[in-house]
Length: 188
Ligand code: GRF
Image 1: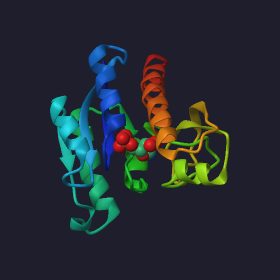
Image 2: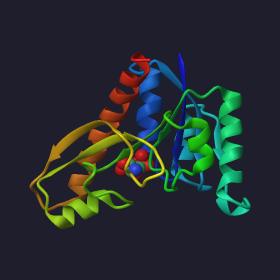
Image 3: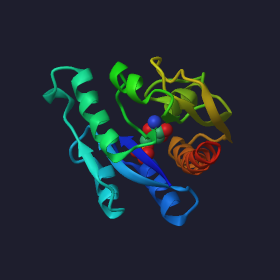
Image 4: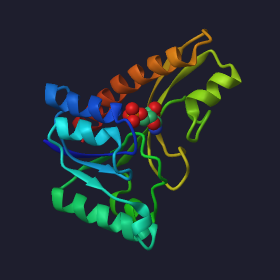
């Protein structure tokens, strides 16, 4: 049984999809740690609901990104984490984590990369006026949303309601993340 760490900064609906996928047995893994850089984020309530250990940290309390990441990597080492899933984690992963967990960190992005990278993928694509939106899961490297693509799904939408579109994309995200993690795990 593989051991996952999920990093999130906000609501954590992807965290919950992954935790639920593991609980249902759709993913042969266990979420052993939720890493969060925002005290009070809703993902922490979801982690409590699933009985997942949390590591909440305030980046400002560390002298450098390396120090914060070193603390996180130490905790992951002690828990025997196999795969790190970023799910709405609003920080750029730095050298320390990439050095120790590189090749084992994946991220979900709510657009069809390489189009619309960055923090507002859905809004940027909507404002551009594309008709096929989507979701990408990729390995994390030192670039912003630029690592090797693992999986993608298209979400066609021709309407004008961004909230409706967001709901559709989040639904696609939850399905794709669970399927992709299971595929990665079972291919190793
Ligand atoms: C998702 O849209 C994800 O693709 C992006 O941030 C959002 C996180 O949503 N990176 P949630 O916190 O999982 O609900």
